[in-house]
Structures are given as structure tokens and as C-alpha cells.
Amino acid sequence: LTHNNFEVNIFKTLHDQEKCVDIALAVEMLYMATVPEAYDIAVLVTGDKDFIPAMQKTRLKAKRVVLCSKRNSCNKDFIVHGTHRDLDVIWLDDYLDILV
Image (cartoon, rainbow, N blue to C red; front, side):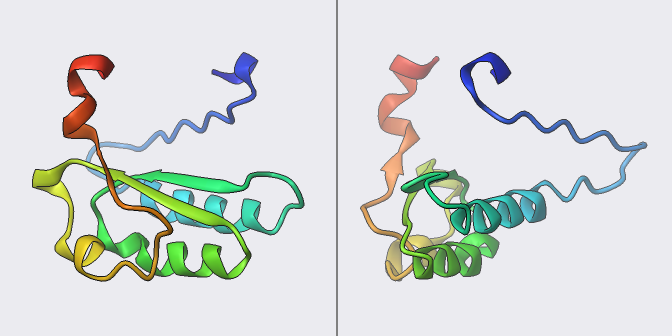
């Protein structure tokens, strides 16, 4: 992935220690929203509503936010309240036959 200009982060933990991946993703999305021309659209693949504040703050930086999720694991707050995203949710369920 790195040769295609993706930044790869590997989180190593001992035993059952929490990895804090969700916090790292939110921080990175917000940080990169402040870097000129880093991205125009943030695509977040999650169903965890803990990302809603980061999505809202990212939009305040004039970035568009798109959510991709699976229907059976997406928190209902993502669907009911659309103030944190710019487009309808992209349901991965609809593309599994292409993706897998």
C-alpha cells in the first residue's frame, strides 16, 4: 500500500490490551483535514457512532465526509441524523460480491 501513497500504521499490543485504533483514525482524519490539499473527501469505514464528533469537526474544515458501513453493524445514529456526513451511507453489503 505504501507504494501507492497510502500511509500504513500497524498497531502492536500485548495480549488483550486495547489498540486505540478508533482514536488514531479520528485524530488522523482531523489532522489531515488541516493540511492544505491533503484530501477533499474523507471516507470512513465504520459503524461506530463514536466517530460522529470527528466527522462533524472534519466537515467544519470544509472537507466532505462519506460513511461506508454494513447494515447489521451500523449504529442507527448514523442513519437517523445525517448532519455528520455529506452523502447517503454507502452500504458495503451491496458490494460484497465485487469486493470479496
